[in-house]
Amino acid sequence: MLTPHKLPDTKSAILNAAERLFAAHGFKATSLRAITGEAQANLGAVNYHFTAKDDLILAVLRRRMRPLNAERLALLDRFEAEAGGRPLKVEKILEALFRPPLELIARDRKAGRYFVRLIAQCLIEPGAFLQPLIQEEFAERNRRFHSAMRRALPHLSSEDVHWRLHFAHGVFLHALANSHVLELSSRGRCRVGNSDAVLHRIISFCASGCRARGEREGEKA
Image (tube, rainbow, N blue to C red; front, top):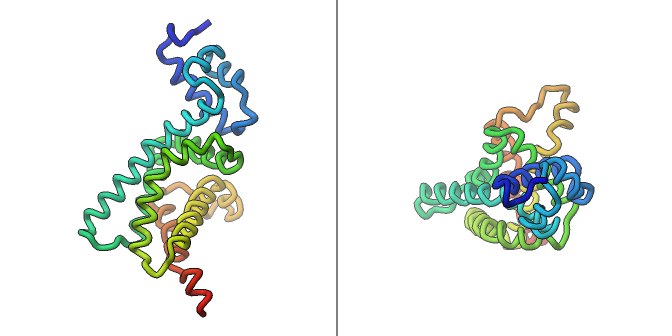
């Protein structure tokens, strides 16, 4: 049998297998035995590298999300530097948020498809085990994008901005995770193929929603 000491790539093989199976079947429905079978490893290798299934799930998610969030923040930094201290346009903020995952999909359709499905699984199967991921991988990203959006839309409260960003994420994930529904319902006229065209449509739609008057303004009307 293969052991973590005899095969340096065992950890990567386990991560790759877990990503494929989690994306296809979900976290709960995927057993460690199925993962080790796919990876041609043994259960001892999983325990050696990841301790428990929850740790393996987090490792799979971090492997995609950590570099992706770094790209998002780097793009936001670039846009803010180009703005020279002026508030960014809502469209530029949303571009920094959505362009990196769309480019991931364009570069590697399989990896991009797995990423979208894994995020969807996090929404379908939320659990306390995801808290470390949220705190480590999303805290700084959320703070930076929230701050940029508040500067862009000073008429909105902090709560409104949180809601708008939450809704925008939902639109983005739905558009990608259910692209097959769009293609079927439009009889093939609408396809998620050209990443720039998709990005433009998503940003245009979400920017309009972000600019809508806030909850407090609605109460005054």
